[in-house]
Image (cartoon, rainbow over all chains, first blue to last red; front, top):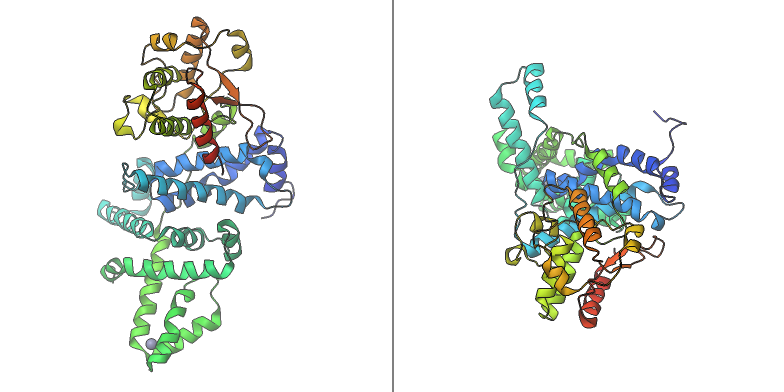
Amino acid sequence: MPDSKRPTDEMLMALVKQGDHAAFQELVSRYKSRIIGFVYRTVNSRELAEDIAQEAFLRVFTKAHTFRDGARFSPWFYRIASNLAINELRRRRRVSFISLERPLRTSSGDELVRDVEDNARGPAELAEQHELGGEIAKAIADLPIKYRVAFVLRDVQGHSYERIAEIVGVPLGTIKSRVNRARSRFKDLMQPYVEALG
Amino acid sequence: MSRMRCNAVRPLIAETVDADADERVVRLVELHAEECVKCRSELDRMRAAIGLLESLEPVEAPADFEARVMARVRTDNLGGWTWREVSDRVAEALALRPLRTAALVATCAVLGVALLRPVETSPFTGAASRIAQRDEPIPVLPSEVIASIAGPVEVGDLAAVPEDSALTAEDGHLESAFGELEARLAAETVSLPLVPEPLGGAAPPAARIVPAALDARDRAAILETGRSRRSF
Ligand SMILES: [Zn+2]
């Protein structure tokens, strides 16, 4: 529901440019889960995703002066996060002393227990679902990075193609093509699971 | 079905699972799939695979995430270099000119960070090597503290500081680590030559940490590698 009393991201950025902490905190609050989710699905490590998201937010504060008047905040911010994630993946590949294959971290144990109670699902089913989630995450992580970013933004996070083109900085047609290629690749990677699930 | 039509239909299959798929394209593919087993199978597998994405749990930021970010904004000198940047820079300078290692290492010890990378070859272990990988800006001495400190750093003085000074930072407690460093510096009236580095043109002068113990060529090398890496 649109709230006329709710300042837009861009209004907040105007204050952040002046060093306003409250406006900055509001942006952190609005975007924290989305941006962690995006980076997490891109780098497949929850811990790394939180580090990168934190760094991305700090760049918003320190680089606020580079935010153009009239620009939209969301694509600008996603672009910062995306660049940080890609750079980190490249750096790690170069240095290659840290494995990206960390176990998928789900929500807290408490929530897991609550799920069991609420939905009367057995531990085996939960484990299976957890395993499936891990397989999905691994398949996404196996996509080439350019495809992966477009795929996560579109099919996991539901951004418009126009916005993704703005975030990534390539033409719309290129984004559509990357998403479609990613889907085909993802479909092939998930085939054993699709078959197993009948 | 003719191979021609399959070739025309196959690339469209990925489009049919889009959240805003063109209904005409979907219909076109489905019409073909009604008569073509192979394309039918491809369409089904695509729908099933993309459908699996629905089972991904939504990601929630940890409860303390916002507070962590705000704490960083409030306490850090955000115009400064990050631990990792300084670490990389000095490692590069050393690679260029593997001299004065002792002075550098001593200086690094005072900075409380392992500046040599990769980690496996670092003379530092534990907290120090972890700090060196951080993309967090290095907190900078308040200007009044800098002003109250007199005299340039002597290599001898730096070497006299225990190697593990300020290396106690565990799990992100950079503030306390730096507080300790700050206190030590104040107590020993040793100064780090913190040279202001304007960032992005508009930021207030922040510290560029280039140890005075280095000679002019070392300093130039560090500043040079810094510049080349500074673009964002
Ligand atoms: Zn066909």
